[in-house]
Length: 373
Image: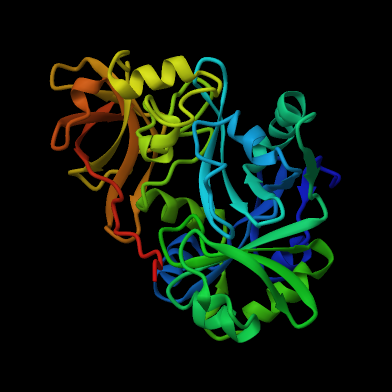
């Protein structure tokens, strides 16, 4: 650990060399910006940006029972996932609350899993305690994770790593940069086309420098990553998702495949299944729902602003909010009582004691541009 008790990613020296402003995040010293949030956000939308996401947890689950074991922790179809396909997953507790959201890939040999940095220690302990006797769980602390995001990402990456252009959104595979092995997925957290690249930490800086040497690529920090993901309507664990929130309340029903739902071939069998399935089926009402909000005035609305109805009664709370660089309008996500979740509903966010009018709207706020082939 660093002297100030923060972990350093394998790219820390490069961040400092590039003039990054560093901040504590998930126990790590991380770059929040280089040239500035707005510039990095717009560059990602028009060209390609390189993000260091090595604070994330990487692990592999192996053995003949690995898929069934992992599926027992989530309301997600793991056993039916095809080779080289990637899927979004949710670890749940016994109340149906979300312990973490994650991504996983069926490599054909094992399951490659990426979890949130702030949750990785607890996630690993949870998996070891619940399915550790059913499969081999191998953490990968010796690996870095880079994200190359933006419409020109594919042109850049295929110069260095031939064949990656064969991937489509939510697929992955083994590739190489010269003699350096890479595991690449066509996915990310920006709403743009892009890739996430796992490689040994000792080789990460050299690969990052090779990417940054390409004319289309500039570095980007946590600030732009946050504004991009919010425009794409994507949740941030700890803000928009937590252990008290169910997938149905979070409006991510799409993440739960039919095979795991009531009447499905492998329905239930995951923590909190009785609660989550009852909410899905409408047998158990939810007390709140996640919604998108757009402000009518150019006043930034940030978490944890209170949301009120026309009568000044509290009906919810903002969990993520900022001034959208693309729309030049304040946008937010938050939770409201179900009767206020209908698109077009007028609400007020309380900012420094004053009401800011907001309208419930569909997400994403900015159309996503994932490459689906």
